[in-house]
Length: 527
Image (cartoon, rainbow, N blue to C red; front, top):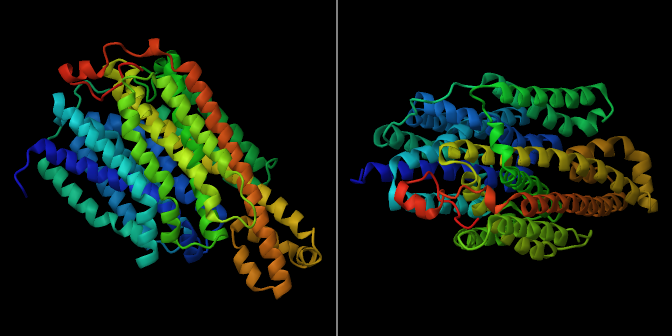
């Protein structure tokens, strides 16, 4: 290997791992229609491909950081790489939707371990000006992964199949593990707190029950004992979690950090950004591929405006944080996301993909404005010794937002598309005939996203009626959840403007202090 300093090997290993981790979030979206056809998956199965990963990532993130502090961050980071790589291999080999979703859950565990220890490894290896350079490179890598993910995922899926979006992780992971074990210096926190098992179990179980209820609600019935029981159980466990965190001496989630309103506002911004535009990516991808008929690579190309613009705006926003208060950056960025969602909510049955383009541009600028400010502000509203916890909380709120956003919007989308397609069918004689003769099979086909299969079994006139009704119903249902996504982003914007107060930021925790003292992460002095 080239004779590089140990600290730069640390940066290479960490950036490689995080690039792989984040890429696996974005590349999967454009592969979902191919996965659906290959594994004969239902619509709920597709939700779980994303949610299983996000749930375990959120559940294990804070605990993984404590484990790394206790047992050694290098060793734990290497274990996370191994878990992620092995789970990626099983994902690629999956023969059923259940096998894929369980593997994705394990992937999320590995991802949480990697993510929780990554920043600590960089902070340990670098100091002074080099630390700022290292975090700048780290930020560029994370932004680049998000930017090229849809295009790379589409290219791989179109050229060699969806399984290879997982297989490519294996050799990359092996190389990263080798570098980690041979070139990275071990570090741990001798004063590290113990693992909060009560918090971990109750938080994880509460999240799972909530998301499971949202995904199953339309199928089982919202008033059924199963769904009501799950929702009550999720609420009860969350109460137990909060009470336990208040009483714990070493809590997984230090609730005292939320005494500052700015911490609430920043966490709310992280949640609403993910629960709005990032959760909507699943349904926008299904629209571009299933409804408009584009292949994975062509779909990836069409998502480039939103991903590239967010990547280009992010460094500009990062520089502006020293001049503009964080509340205005976060609030304005989320307003742009809300505006972009509303602009996209103008789809009709005969629309082309360009109907999304103005909304992509506006929302992309908003994402680019919010992301870097979230990262810096999360650690700037707490004393430096709590920066690791604050960063973990921010990442956890992001993942919880994705998981609950996908499940909640999916529940609304599934319910609405059934109603709207049926109403559209009944508005024409041919459609009414389809509803009368094939109504029993139509419901399951709409619920599982297998309408195209149902169309092939019908006579031409009825097939045309069902196809037209499906396009109209899909467009109208997507518009509704886009409006809901806009409302979620708007709530985050208002919370940012009201709660993220300048006086809540730690005065000594600024870029100037960082240069002299080597703080954990750069933070906006004027936020």
